[in-house]
Image 1 (tube, rainbow, N blue to C red):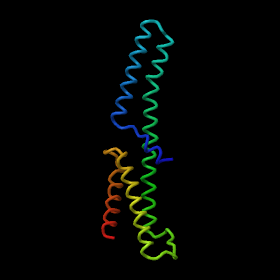
Image 2 (image 1 turned 30 degrees about the vertical axis):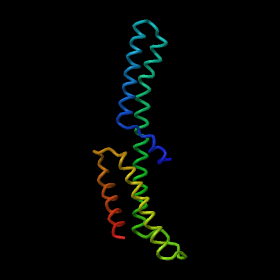
Image 3 (image 1 turned 120 degrees about the horizontal axis):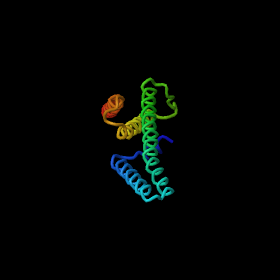
Image 4 (image 1 turned 180 degrees about the vertical axis):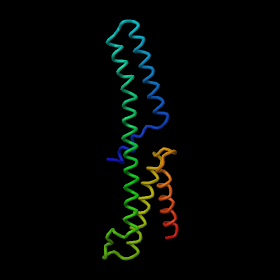
Length: 142
C-alpha cells in the first residue's frame, strides 16, 4: 500500500497549480456573493477550502508512506547485517550470493525512491542517505 501511495506524491508544480485553482475558486465565490448567487458562492468557497485540505491530506499520507518504505528498507538491511534471515542450505554458494546481492540492490532502490520524496531539510534524510551509501559501498566491494 505504501508503494502505491508513493506514486501519488504531488510535486511542487502540481501543488502550486492546485493552490492556484483553490484561489481562483475563492475569487469566483466572492464574485458570486457580490452577485447574490449564494448557492454558487457556497459551492465555490467549499471547493476553495476542499482543494488545499485534500492536498495537505495527500501530502501527509504520502510523506508517511515514504517514511514507512524507508524504515522498512532500513529494518531489512539490519536483519540482513545481523544474519537473522534464513539462508536456504540447498542453494549453491554463488546462487546464495546472487540472491543476497539482488536483495541488497532492491533495498538500495527502495531507499533511493523514498529519498526522492523526503524533503531536503528533513532530519532523517542524512540517515537514509548514509544507508544508501553503505549499501552501494558494500555492493561495489562484492
